Image (tube, rainbow, N blue to C red; front, side, top):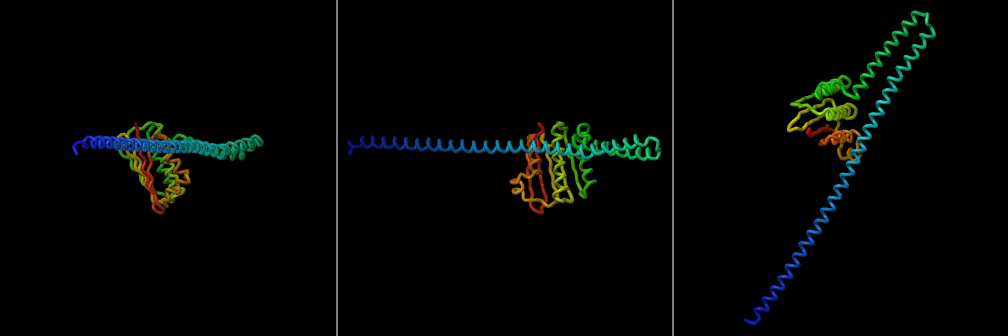
Length: 263
């Protein structure tokens, strides 16, 4: 028994060494497999992020193209048509230069056309750069936008502005367009009767809370279809590093929280 003890010890040591090597190999294999899995997940995430960035870029281009088409249509249909009519009126004066009554009538029509054209040019200019946004800030322009929306549509808008610090003009314009998109959707699509809008800054972040009592919608279906309204809102927010959180269901209105860092 005493002579077999060293042999048993060697066998035990050898077996222990083999077991440790197998354990170490298993641990190394597990680490390698885990690292491969992490790499695959990272690649999948990067591909999804790149796809999302492409969609946001495409959405930005579509939004710009939509604005250009709307501007071209307004200039052609309103300003262009008014100038063409004015040209015809001036031509009538040239044809009958001695008829005083006719000249007065044409002159009055011309003045009306000019006044309407001036109003249209101001409206188009305001659409391109909202009135008072640079001079008086975001709160002033959003308040004017809400008042204008209530004048044009049967909707109540409750605006609350709290502790709104000065904001970069570029961010101001994008936020204004975002709110404009929300109000347009409320009037044209959701059939909302009331809208609550709250703007505030806290911890160097602009927070926007939006709520309406409209029809609501299935968010997942709308997002999969890449609804233009949702795309524009998300795109505008992403452009300035912000985040959006939608809450909506059919017949339960829409809630939206937008958070935009101001640094």
